[in-house]
Length: 352
Image (cartoon, rainbow, N blue to C red; front, top):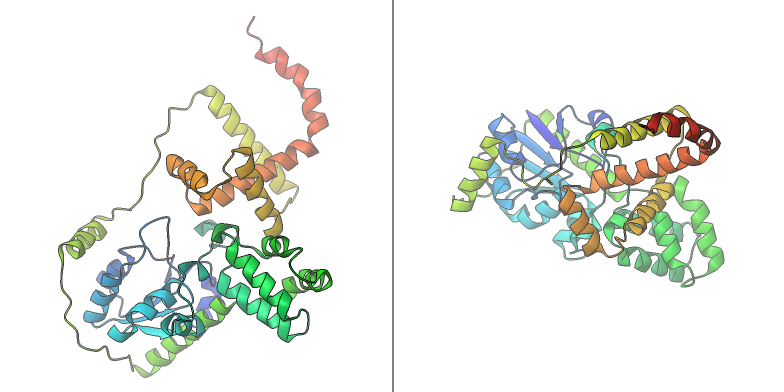
């Protein structure tokens, strides 16, 4: 059985056109151990969690290799782990893996991004730095921008915190630092021409796994001794018990006012869907900025504390910000009807 951990880099539907495999969500700590326990004979690691929950541990990959399982990595978390473990037999595929292995890249944030949840196919809401680099380089090769604008865009993107890293955000940050006409040209060019190094590397890995599987020529792992430490035994116990790492925020018992407010959210969001109100990448970026500003979560440390106190992960934060933008839009659209309803509301709300 071939198991591939996949998320925002490539949809499972796209991946299945390249390789018949069992596709699982982005990997967290213990997931590779569990996959081997359930019968995986080869594992492809593309996407994995970085900060929401503990990341895939090096030792569980080494354990899988020691059990005779072929483990491949590319594109995102897979490229990171392969660059760290290729000498122990993990097979790294793609340009991103090579860049990490050779020291051309070192920061985790080069491949990190924020994505939506499983029910929305892990759709990415921000852009990985490696993909921005690839797209901006293509823009220069295509004559859209020159070297100075290329450098300014890359520098502007790199300074952004990875949950804020989008093409519109990068363009805003680069204004005044490069040629205005070239920046305007890039702003018109990037949507139909953007490219993804992560996606290309992921597809290359799937094709390599298929090639090896069709010929039953799995890579040989170098011999090494796996020390089963106390920490590794803890990982096994945790994985077997199915314990999910991370904390959840305690919530007070909701009252009727909370339920009424929740009902309003349900109806407002349903109306936004009915009226086909859509939020694109730029709109989502602005929605997150407004969400943070309204709650005075300007500094990353403030946002992190707010999220930790409520048990909110990055994917849920994006959904909440998008929902607030949808509700605000419905409020504007129905403003006159709401005003007309206030008299009726006052009548039924009065208990005397």
